[in-house]
Picture 1 (cartoon, helix red, strand yellow):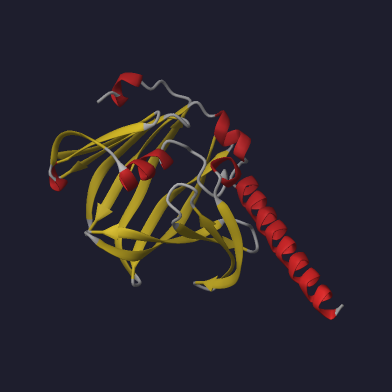
Picture 2 (picture 1 turned 90 degrees about the vertical axis):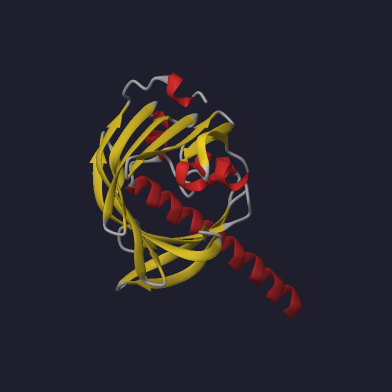
Length: 235
């Protein structure tokens, strides 16, 4: 009988954790404007800069929500282009040996597809088939946070989302990324939250390795439901 009650207790604890994780995600999504509001956006144009070693590089992102996205970066006079379009993708990156349009595959294609949706993996984890788990709490720079682990249905990679326990806003994420051929843990910190048409975007993202900032993204402008020429996604 004791063994049965012990096993039942495990089941109830697991169910409670799953429910709690889902509630936290729902509150986080609501704090950003709600999943329905994100999905109702038809298109967007986002501009800003990627700052690498103190050098700003102009950034333009154009997307048809949940279908296609094009990212253009002006890197010291060289154009770096990444495109995802309804299941396929391509890139131009002279610094990586792709001076002409080259098809995306593997992890690059998975990463590009994620950029085609305004809602992120956490907001829309059920539809995308990802698994989530509440992994306890942790302080992030003095802020108490819930730790939500998301395992991607696409590549089984993990990302940890740190959600403020007070207001359910995102503080940081951690994930393992390939940096110049080496697998490294990258922390991304989110700040400067702004509202655009009822949904919110973090205008600044600082990426750190071993506590040191190696890259920042600073957005200047977010335009929603603007005309986007579908020809820009063609290879």
